[in-house]
View 1 (cartoon, helix red, strand yellow):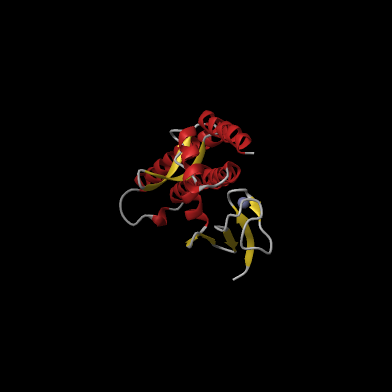
View 2 (view 1 turned 90 degrees about the horizontal axis):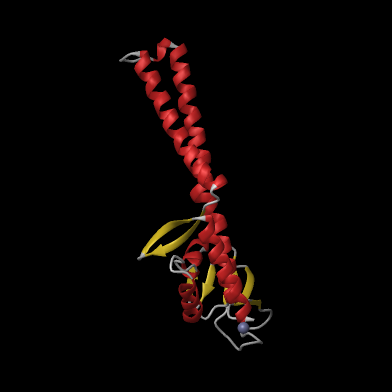
Length: 193
Ligand SMILES: [Zn+2]
């Protein structure tokens, strides 16, 4: 397996040609391979790595401090993980669904208008019922699109993956809450150095 990077997570520094960190003597180094991460005898993929290192930040500062203390990982690295997590899952949890809803809405509206123009499509029931059924679905999905797009583009909502009461969840947070978390990380990072 090709090792891409070895890192001391306490110092947030790359380690070269060594099995121990020169700065802090830490030997629990994180080994980043192409698709997985080895740390303290456990294997992680990107998703489980995010889950392992992202605190459920609803409580805020205390929870981030607890994670830092318990795992002995630099605030700077936890911060990078939080940023990566929220970028990836804001796309998967908000932008992508909004695009999918938009496409499904148009498919239904187009199918509805094709049915109106081609009476051959009817198996049973009336052409109007079928047409309005597809139009109804089209409008419904268009509404889903408007809501998710509004949350992403106007409200600037964010989303990240975290374990909440033992369950893996997409946690949606407001722009304000996101800014508070970012600011908290910035202050903690400065104390760290
Ligand atoms: Zn170190």
